[in-house]
Length: 96
Image (tube, rainbow, N blue to C red; front, side, top):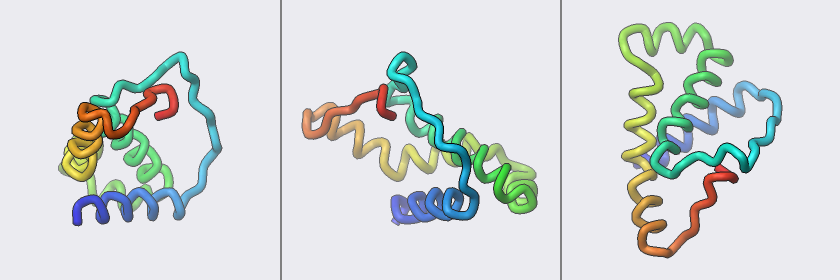
């Protein structure tokens, strides 16, 4: 259920507000253990720009990045880390 909620929140944020399409460089790969935090930073930045009123109300007393880093980690990171460690999937930090 948490995965579904996290995915839904990300989808709504990016559907509601489209931005520029920038490509990332392989010269700055993101380590797997930093993915939840980086995803949370991106989500919170988009939420702040696209929904400033909601952002101001929802995160008046809490830190958006900390809250969503934990939520993204609990929702999918642990499963992904287990699969990478088990050799089931391959992680490419340059494409993250």
